[in-house]
Amino acid sequence: MQTPQPLQDYQSYKNLPQLAGLCTVEEAAAPGLSVEECVRRLKRFHYAFKRLHQILTARITAEPIYELKTGFSHHAYLCAEHVAALRTRIGEMREPPLGLEDTPHPALGTFFDEILACPTTEELIEGAYQKAVDQLWHAMRYYNDATHPLTDAPSRRVLRFALLEVDDMANWGARVESSLVGTDPAGEKRADEWTHYLGTLLAAAGGLDGTGSTSDQPVERRYSKAPYVYYPIPKRDERFQDLWNQGVNAESFLYNPEYPARAKVLMMLFKRLREVDVPEMMASIIAQTPGKPWGYYRDMSRQVWDEARHAMMGEVGFVALGVDWTKVRLTYNWSYRLNTECTPMERHGVLYFIEQGLMPKTGKRYEYEVAAASGLPLAATIQDFDWADEVLHSQIGRAWYVPEFPSLQKALEFGDQAWSKVLSNWTTVKEKGLTNHDNWWPAVYAQACAAAAVPPDPAILGFNETYEGKRADLQRVAAE
Image (cartoon, rainbow, N blue to C red; front, top):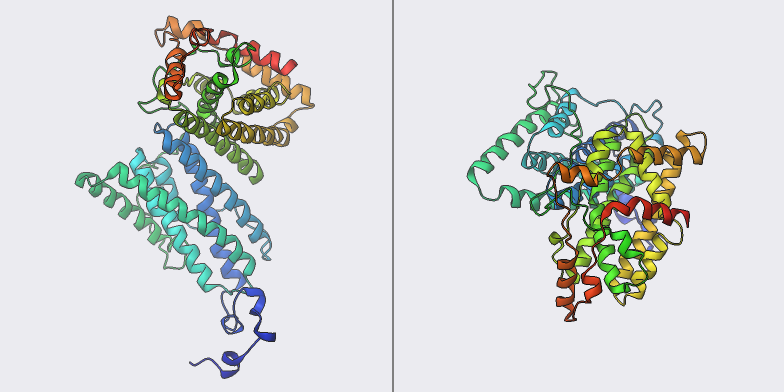
């Protein structure tokens, strides 16, 4: 059927962009999707983002590969943001009650359950990225093409941002899959079989957006026959050595007025890099705290991502200074013990108590001033944004942790008491033969000096103060 001539000939005043630039009148003359159909599909997208957020968050702690641990932290946060945006949009579309906690189709629930429970990193990447993320992108693209560009402009705007970031996620996943599976024929065969199985689940659900034919025939579960149980033990890849080592007290060095700012930058980079244990711990809080408003999960996921970024800031800082960051000993004592000895609320309390110690002038402001005085612009940039992030994290704690207590003082006391449960086990881990608490500082400092072509200072090279004083150092900073 041909388009009526009036539509083809229609011109706006002085040929200005029609309909606020959203589309032409001719394009807007087609009916598009109904509100009911839009809501039905948007609920599917919401469900997919929510489940991907759950899956990626749940795997941060137990994923040993550092690059994947940080990547999952990033993408879980993106998913949390898109869940929030879709919840808002669906709530605008005449659909109370929203039913946003419902599973759209049993087979779609099984699809995500299987990815959540799959035992290997390779299967996780193939399922989450090569299948779920890829199908989500195509479903949103199909929606964008089918819905009315004018009447449903708010939904198209929400999906415009989602499509950009889901595309980035898909490309990242493809690169990871290529690196992990490569051209190994056996690996490719297993991947094909696994994704084919997931495809049968999606087909039974009518596709990710539910536009296909659905089936009520149950598909046999594989990995998710038993309910998924979150695994709280942090894992690290082979680059992370001597994981209980507490042989260097960074705070003692950092607050010593006798040491120059440039050397202190190395210790601050160590502090940033060791923040990899914060996503490992915070992921456990999110995974083991159900029933909160979605704003809680979005804000906590933002902090998880920030802490992962901080670790990568430390990585970049070391590389830029010619230092092999794997020579630094990054303990997982903190995340390990909090995850295994404390409740989720106690973990949050410890986190909030520490954050408050970073707010006074001797906390993050001091670190930024040291970095600025070092003559290293990158170090100043790192500390500038680290400081800004920590102010936000303190606000997140005030929004979601403090209201659980009668007063701010009670909230702080609870966090202090929880931390007392997991005080540095300096002696016990050595007695158990887990570490000798070797002093790695001289080798790292000497490497930085060699890269900068300057002789090492014997006094700095000889720094050898242990981790035992860390709690006292932080308490002193908080008091000041």
